[in-house]
Amino acid sequence: MSNKLTIIAAAFIASAVFATSASALTITNNDTKNHDLRILVTGAKKEEKVKVAAGASAQFDCSKGCKAHLGKKDKGTADLVLKGTETTITIAKDGKLSAM
Image: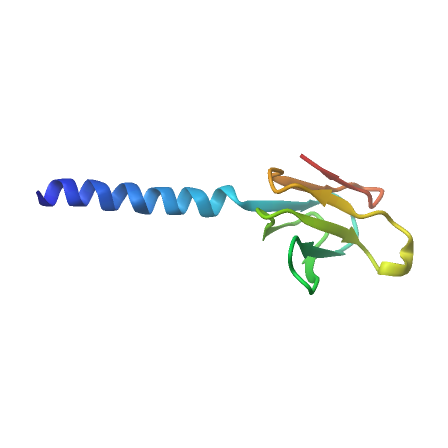
C-alpha cells in the first residue's frame, strides 16, 4: 500500500513541477542594450515591469495570456499580444519584439 502512495505522490509532484515550468515564458534580450518590458497579464489591473539585461534572459508567467510592451507607453510602439501558449519572447537587436 505504501508503494502505491509513494508512486501517486511522486506523480503528483512531477506534474506540479511540469505545470509550473510549462507556464513560464522566457524573455530573451538579443540587443546590446538593457530593456524594460511592461507586461499586463490578462485580467490584471496593474502592469508589471520586467528588466532584461543585454544578452540575458528572464522568466515570466504568462499562462493566462498577456500584453507585452517594450519601452515607455508614449513611445508609440505596438503591444505584443500573447495568448498564453507562447514560450518565448525575443527582443531583437533592433529593439523589436517577437513571440513563439
